[in-house]
Length: 357
Image (cartoon, rainbow, N blue to C red; front, side, top):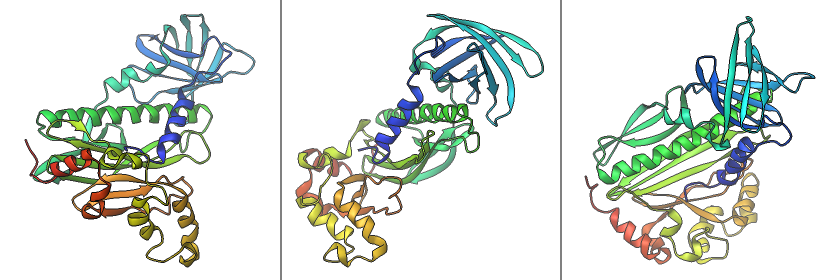
């Protein structure tokens, strides 16, 4: 499983960012030109909107003007008013004019496009740059991020072989998907009038292990898309670098544990419960400060978060409020043997030899 607690919250946040509001002819996504520059324009949030020029990762947000359904006030990423727009939107075309705060006018015209295409142009041109390098099993990996957005990272294998190139491609695609969510959420939060902090995502590398041909990486996601609580949780990727195949962690376990290990199951009672109870016999024996965490963990399923040389790392789908509980522990391979699927045993064997080039 790549994502844990963040999955539902993240998808809900992304949907909230992308779902068009009903009632205005300008609702939706438009592609065209503003003056001499290519522009992508979007109105999806009850008349709130945003646009960017060319492939810029920073754009402007638009708020409806007072008493004029064809007018919008324009603000930059810091909340400074930078101009206004007047638009006429039909079923498939938009035209209008932008006036800067200095009085300069620029014509705008465009056509309606798919709503999910708003960030496609700039994400296709994004420049991913190394932040730092890591060494695993004699190989060099780069921690990379989009230029100008260093808080969202992924990995890239330097000088990749054939299977490793597919790994790099998959990790890049996942990063671009996260950037899409980040940019949408920032635009939404700013369009609602909150410029500092502007919302969006942070994705950091938490754990990396490369054994044999199996590469396992765990990231931590934290973000806010305008909702009070935000969202947080791990994202996980495991690959066979010899083939480029992704090895989903749930498939390492027997079918009855594909959705996690619940209290009362053999895996939970054998390997998880002692961690939840910290070696004590029952919940009431835990210190009071840990008891709420224990109650939450007993009610939730334990899920795999990563694989490493010592075993499989397990944790829980914590809500953001409970994220401080933070249990993550390693179940040794010998203790896990009875709970591994045929795939899990085969992939475990792939962890034994040195990485293949």
